[in-house]
Amino acid sequence: MSARSLTIGRLAESAGVNLETVRYYERIGLMPAPARTEGGHRSYEPEHAQRLRFIRRSRELGFGIDAIRRLIALSEPGVQACCEVRDMAQDHIASVDAKIADLERLRTVLKQAVADCSEGGRVRCPVIAELGSIA
Image (cartoon, rainbow, N blue to C red):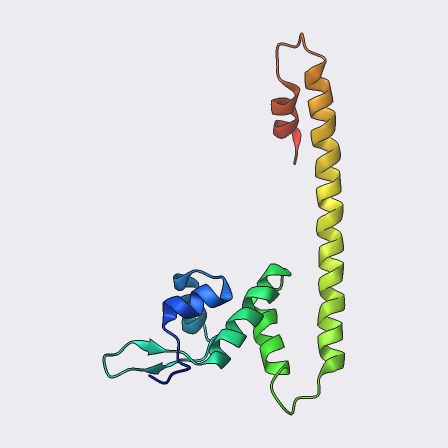
């Protein structure tokens, strides 16, 4: 193991993810397989940490596994794909906008249910009634 090598625990900690998340990303091919020590332990390099942080940040921004796989491919040296990345980001913005609209509708429904509930004197809770009416 070189002086720059990381154990799986240190790698996970440095990227702010769970150890099992690292193994999962390796299993599905988002993370390249690390070298192994003579004892069979994974030995990660700083490039692994950089990739893991890229994946984590992409997940935080709501990109799915397939989109992240594509973004990784587009980020490789020599690939000139800024337009494709821009298009992916634009599509993602549309998805985020749709989620925001859904959340705003949900907020309105919940606020009304809470307002109805605060009027008191009802036999049936309006919040429970509202939850049962959402299709």
